[in-house]
Length: 207
View 1 (cartoon, rainbow, N blue to C red):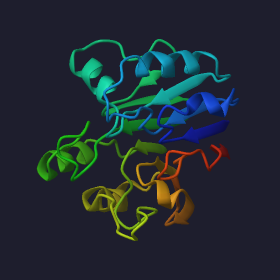
View 2 (view 1 turned 180 degrees about the vertical axis):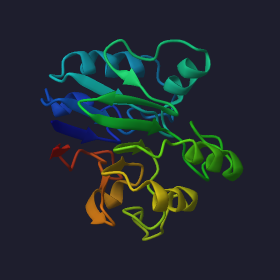
View 3 (view 1 turned 60 degrees about the vertical axis):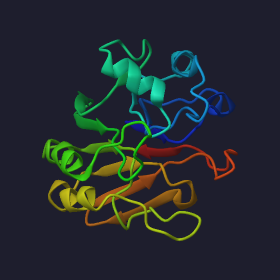
View 4 (view 1 turned 30 degrees about the horizontal axis):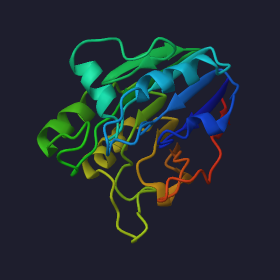
């Protein structure tokens, strides 16, 4: 199974062209958020519809206000992708689970205070093969351009028990890449840099 992972496309998804594989994962921050531009979700959904995959999975990020508003209103978020918010899906013998929450950024989309955040991480099923979050865990591919660690400590603690095969996320553009630790491949799939320029290609895995 070929899994392709992207994150933090910030309205630059069209520049990636047509991607191909079995499962496409978007780890959030598909939009810009600053100006609350209308039509962001529709344009992303149209792009999803042109991709060559059997399954497309997407979560929100702190810039994705429109996504948050649709989900809160109980409206379908996408036609051409499966939106995951504290939810999972099984495909090809693998269990995927997505959660969009981001710490510390009060006033941004998908922010939760620490106690609520811990509750959401506790709800992740133990039998999760591929975990999709927007925030990194603390200390793992989470340093910003000023070398500050910006990940979530509570998520890091939950991962000590979970140990998924892949944990993919984004949020911190300056730490894009991947690293393996304790049986898990951690993937910061950010596509853009801090100037919102595409500087990385999607991450690909054959499972």
